[in-house]
Image: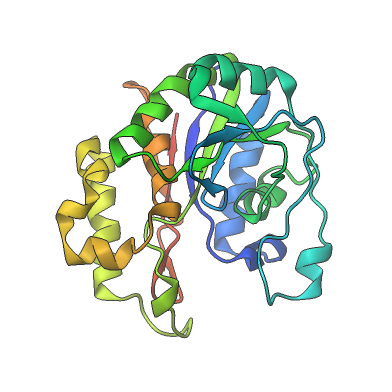
Length: 253
């Protein structure tokens, strides 16, 4: 059974210990799909080369600061998968290197603790190579797309709009530019105009405000590369946090 490709807007790490409309949808997805393993492309493993793991027991990384103790004390410890690591290496060849110094960061565990709370699905992270162009991010996704047909789920975790320098009270509405960019990308995805997503900077100042750094946006491009022509797209969690974070997410299956 082909597994889906999913882009998740992960938002604040506090979602890991919260019950809200976002986490409810993550739980629903976990109830629907039981993959052999997960390839996780998290914005928080942002590197200058393409890296993956070959670790049977990767550790949870608390890669955030200033949050309640409960968040740091939370455990999420799925196994790795040497089989999936080998599949990734065979798919990417010399392009990918092994780095076991990284574990499971909050871009992964904040979502998966709801999606698969028993931590019973093996997990291998694949880094976001910041030295690649947007087009190359997309091509990388094409190279691993076939793994979906082998029972592996591809999840990309980031935020389409992610501008921490402009966050404000949760009671404030989203900035107009954030909504404009989020809607622009949604329309491109729904109509499969992926070139607009790749060339997102063509949208001008709105794009620069929404994506001041590519770390949270590039996972989307790799995810889009892994999409098949016959996949149906579902948009979920379309909402905003702190005015300048988009939670909008997509599932392709």
